[in-house]
Amino acid sequence: MTLSPEAPTPTSQPLRVLSIQSWVSYGHVGNAAAVFPLQRLGIEAWAIHTVQFSNHTGYGAWTGAVFPPESIAELVDGIEARGVLPGCSGVLSGYMGSGGTVAAVVEAVRRVRAANPAALYCCDPVMGDVGRGVFVRPELPELIAAQALAAADVVTPNQFELELLTGRTVQTLAQALEAAHELRGRLNAGGPRIVVVTSLVRADAPADQIETLAVTGEGAWLCRTPLLPLDPPRNGTGDVMAALFYGHYLGSRDVARSLSLSMSALYGLLKRTHDHGSREVMLVAAQEELTAPSQVFTAEQVA
Image 1 (cartoon, rainbow, N blue to C red):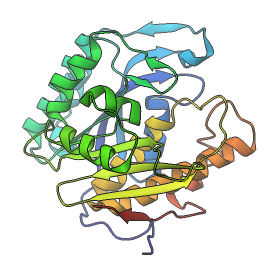
Image 2: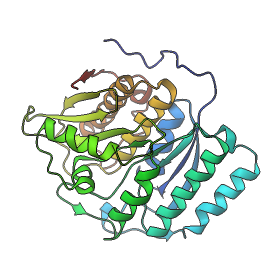
Image 3: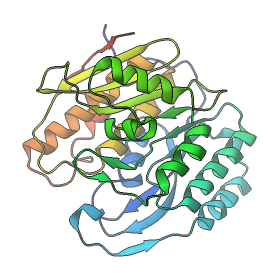
């Protein structure tokens, strides 16, 4: 199967996304990782920042401030006053640092859908990762599961988060499919209910590969790339992946194509980052990978 980033999309309407995430002045995580890829895909990204830090917290020290959840509603008020919410294609959310932020994001989704019932909400349920465990407040996984996932059309957990949200152990493809289908059942009943499991490493797959699994009601697709020896792991890769998959899906409504192109772009970005030994993902220097990956990895249907 040949995939081209320049292939026509099924809609001629401009795509606009409300992206509610953290922001860093230096480096690329949260909106600083998601907005640029969306823009490179030709999507207008309306960013609302939940925090503004000097750099991501993985450095151990940072400066800046956490914005109150009420600021999200205030900014949505201002955007709505411009009369543009009916043209909003959807909402993308990432790290949510408090229960109030979860509620504010879900309310923003409600307001966008009230203006445009066709809008799609993509939730990246940032809660933890292998090796680090849960790195959010103890109450957040339950609140995200109960509120944000119930409103979501697309959800992009990593393998650790999939296990946390479902209470299942995921070590094989069959277990990953079962857990993903269970999670699908908890998403917005009126939407496509797509689960994209990132950073999947399983016992029944090659040891030198990393995978992303996309599961829908019509089937499941797996895309595999070589596993790069990134030590330490680069912060923000999940944010980039969520933005790329969501952006491609909004334009094409093709899960396999979106999975292939987003994984291929992410691999190209991370390979460039690894080759140069950069502590931060080289989002700007490797930007051509976002729209025209130098190596395309196909998505194989597995169910």
